[in-house]
Amino acid sequence: MRGIAEPWFPREEYLARVARVQTALREAGQDALLAFLPESVTWLTGYFTRAYGTFQFAIIPAEGEPVLVARDVEEYYLDQTCVFAGRDLWTDSDVPIDVGIRAIRATLGATPRLAVELSAWVLNAARFLAIRDALPGAIIEDAGHLVARMRLIKSPAEIAYQRQAARAAEAGMQAGIEAAGESSTEREMAAEICAAIIRAGSDLPGPGVLSSGERAFHLHGGYSDRVLARGDVVQLECTPNVRHYHARFMRPMKVGVATDEDQRIVEQLIRIQDAAIAAVAPGVAAAVPDAIYRDGVLSSGLRETYTNKTFYSVGLLLQPNGGEPLEAAPGCDWHFQPGMVFHTYVLACGFGMSETIAITETGIERLTNFPRQLFVT
Image 1 (cartoon, rainbow, N blue to C red):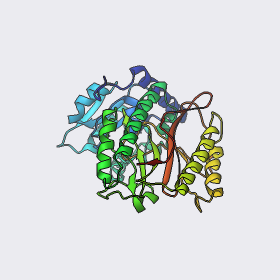
Image 2 (spheres, helix red, strand yellow):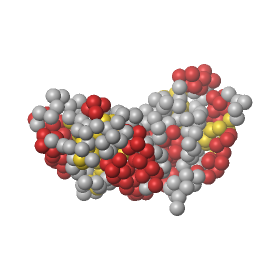
Image 3 (cartoon, rainbow, N blue to C red):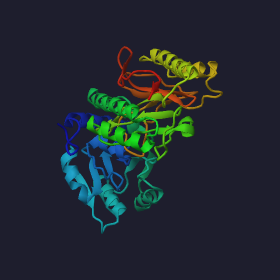
C-alpha cells in the first residue's frame, strides 16, 4: 500500500541528488540554485502537493540543506513528503514573492551568485523582475537544464514506478479497445479508460491522445462527444503515471472493419519500429534509430514528410509538462545511456504504434508489453 503523503524514495536518494547539484554549483562558483520547476522541487526534496501550481520553490545552497518556500496550507504535505526541515511559508494575506525574497536573503545574504531555473513556468516575468530588483547585488545566471539533465538517468526505484505505470497503461488500452464499439462515443471510451488505469494504480486519470474519424489523422486530439462509426480510425495513447512517473504507449484501431491496406500499413509500421528499437543500446547515437524510423516511413510511401521526433525522455512529469528535454529528431547529437527511459513512436495514415522503453546495460527493456497489431473493435 502506498499513499501520496509520504516520501516516495528513501532520504538517502534525495541526499545523493542534492549532493550532485551542490557539486555542480561549487564547480561553477555559484552559491545556490533556485529550483522553480515543480519536477525539480519534488525530485530534489521529496516535497509534493497537488497544488504545485501555487507559488513555491526550493533554495538549494552549495553547502547545507535545502529551504522550501511554499504556501502555509501545504505544511501538512511538507511534513509528510519533504525530507528536509528548512522552510519559509507565506499566507494568503502575504505577497508570496516578498516571502520568497526574504527566504533567499536569510539563507544566502544580499549578494549571492545564483543559478536560477529561468525557463520554469512557475517563475513568471513579474516574479523574476521582483527578485532581481530586490537583490541588486546578486549575480543571477540561468541554471538551464541542470536538474533536468540529472533526471534523465533514472534510479532503479524510479524505473520501478514506471513499470507500474506501464501495467496501468496496458489496462487502459484493453478497456479502450473493448469500449470502442460502433455507436459508442469517445467520451464513453475515455470514461472506461480512466476507470481502468486508476484501478490499475495510476495516480491521475486521462487517456492521453484519443480521437476518431478525421481527427485521428492529426496528433494530440482529445476525446469529445463524437459517436464512433463503422470504418473509423481511432487513435489512442494511454498515459498513466505512478508517483507521477510516466509510461505510455499507442495502438492503432479500426471500428468494425479493417481493409487489407489498413493491415498492410500497420504491419509496415510494426516492422519499422521493431527495427528502430532493435538498434537502440548504450552508446548508440540517437540519430541511428531516428533515421531508421524516417527512412522506413518515407521509403514505404506512408508519408511525404516526417518531421516529428521519434524518441523523447519520460519520467517524473507534472502537468503541463509532457516530456523531458531530450528528444531524437534530425540533427540530434546525443547517445543512449543506461537508466534513460523513452517513449518512442511512429505515426502514419492515422495509425500510431509506440512503446515506453528503458535503456539497460546491454540493450533495452520494453516497459509496455501489449499485443502489437491493428485492433478491429
